[in-house]
Amino acid sequence: MKRILLVNPPIYDFSAYDLWAKPLALLYLSSILKKQNVQIEFFDYMDRLSKLIENTESNIYGCGHYIKEKIAKPKIIEDIQKDYFRFGIPANTAEKYFESLQPPDVIIIGSVMTYWYMGVEETVKSLKKIFPDTPIILGGIYATLCFEHAQKIKDINDIITGGFSGLETILEKYNINIKSNNDFSSFPIPDYSVYEKLEYVAIRTSIGCPFNCSYCAQKILNNRTYSLKTIDVIKNEIYELTNDKNIKNVVFYDDTLLYNANRHIKVLFRNMLDYNKTFNMHTPTGLHAKFLDEELAELMFHVKLIDPRFSLETADAHEQQYSDHKITNNEFKSAIKILKRAGYKNGEYTVYLLIGMPNQNIMSIKDSIKFAHDLGAKIEFSEYGPIPYTANWAYIDELFKEEPLFQNRTYFLSRQKNYSELLELKQFAKNLNNKL
Ligand code: SF4
Image (tube, rainbow, N blue to C red; front, top):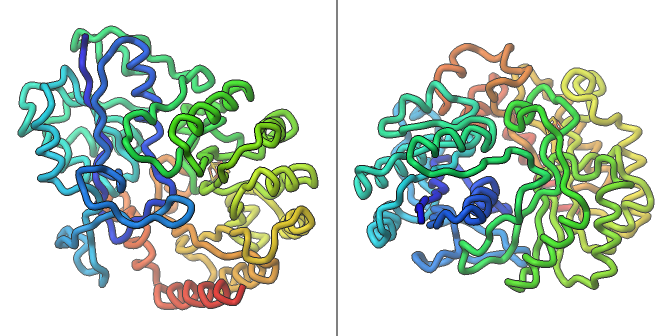
C-alpha cells in the first residue's frame, strides 16, 4: 500500500487565533486518498489539542489561542512596531513525530495565506532533513496565488494549483495511481478521524461563490465553479461527524451559505430541527444579509446558529457600488429587523467591516461603525490585505506585489497614511462593542 504524509504548516504572523480553523482541503484529500487505498499519515502543526503539546484553553464554542513563540521579524518588515510570532506545534516536537514514522512515498503540504509562506519553508526543511528521498508536493492558497514565488522554495518537487485536479498526474510520476476528482459535490466526508481530540468540525455545503468582489480571489481558488452538495449528503456528514465524536460545534466554511436558501440551507436547517440536535452552529466566513427572510432567520435561531456574522464591509453607498454590490444600507437594516424578530438580541450578531483599503475614507469607516452599532451589531474588522488575481490588485503599489510578506494585513494596515486614525477607529469600535 502506498503511503502519503499530509501536513498543515505552522503560521508566522503578528497574530493568529483559532476561530474554528481547520485545514479542510487536506481533510477532504485524506478521505479521497484513503478511499483509494492510500495509507495516510496526517500532521497538523496548528492542532491546539494535540497530545504532543500542552493544550491551550478553549472558549465554550471551541475557539482559543495557539501556542506561540516570539521570534525575530523578517528583515524586510522589521520596521513595524509589533511583535512577530511563530504559532503552532514547535519544530522539534514535530520533527520527533516525523522521525517516528516510516518514510512516506510522497509528502503533500497545504498552504493558506500568501504571507504565511515561512511556515511552508520551515515544514519543508524539517521534512527534508528526516525524509531526504521523499518527494514533496505543495498545494493550497499560497501555492495557487504565488506560484512563481513558491517555485523558489528549495526542495519542493511539485506544486499543485487551484484544487486537486492536477494531483493525479503528479502522483503518477511517483507510481501512485489515483483518480483526483475536482468536483466538490462528490467529495467524501472530511476525514476528522486524523484528530484525537476535537471541539468542533468545519464543513462546507458548497464551494465557490456567484459574486465577484473586488478584493476576493475565490474565483481563481475555486476554478470559477460554484458547486453544492445535496442536502441528504450534508445531513449525513453532519450526523456522522457529530455522533462519532460528541461534537458540540459545527462550523460552515461556505462563502455564500444563504444563497438560494429555499432550496438549500432552509431545507438543511429544517432537517436539523427534526434531528433534535444538541450542537451549535457557526458561520465565521460571513453571511449575505440580503438573502435573509423571516423563515430563514427563525430557522437560524432555532437551530442554534450562534452569533451569525454578516458581511457588510462598508455602509458607504459609493464604496458598496465599487467593491461588491453585496447589499444596500436599507436592505441591511431590513435584514437586521428580521433577525431581531426571530429572537436574536442586540450584541448576539456580528457585522464585518473592511478596514485598511488604500485611500479608504476615514469618515466613511466611522460612519459604517456607527451604522452597524446602531443596529445592535458587534463589529469585527476584516483588515484588508492585497491579494493577487483580485480586481483591486491592479491598483496596489508595485512594492507590495514583490514580496508576499508585504501582503500581510497587519503590515499593510501599518503602511497606510492614516494608520494612527485607523487604530483609533478600531478602538472606537471596541468601545462600542463593550456597550452592547
Ligand atoms: S468576498 Fe465573499 S461574496 Fe465576495 S466574492 Fe468573495 S466569497 Fe463571494
